Image 1 (cartoon, helix red, strand yellow):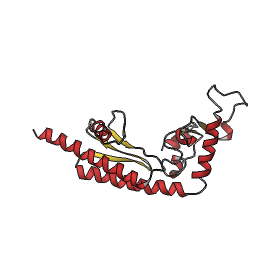
Image 2 (cartoon, rainbow, N blue to C red; image 1 turned 135 degrees about the vertical axis):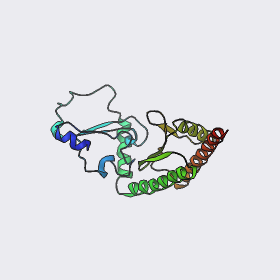
Image 3 (cartoon, rainbow, N blue to C red; image 1 turned 180 degrees about the vertical axis):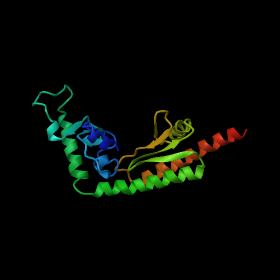
Image 4 (cartoon, helix red, strand yellow; image 1 turned 120 degrees about the vertical axis):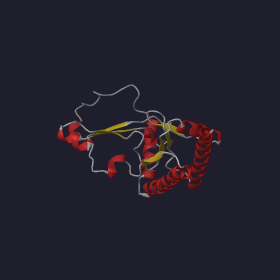
Length: 204
């Protein structure tokens, strides 16, 4: 709907794929699942493949109005990042293997999160796609408590949303299955413990 609206009013459609691009949703670009053709795409973060600083702004040729050297900055031309990004693209995107792995792991994550919500009988909704999914809790204090409990069990998992009401899974795309499984088990354990303790307090 937003893409259609932008096209109708001749507004440039800019897609921020800095976190959700580079395979995070299963395809290289997050918008590939939809009938969307952006004018400009922003890429960064995992793009370098090695945690090095690298960002790209992709645009349709008709929007490239800059002369060479007209638009630049001090923090550019990180040669090591160029090398690692090239290696990452050639390694992980030479075929569809990584995309298949991400989609397979994403199904495991989705099933695990749905089970957590069902088992805990809590007012919550599973949201997201690919390897960026989470549980949005009606009780906005739950996500932070679960994150803290998970940290005590050596699992780092962050919160998201305007009120930190979402517990967000954002594992590496190359995570081994056994590590993903264990992480989801810890998340399940912590969610059950936190929800049960809240219910016990409410009962008294």
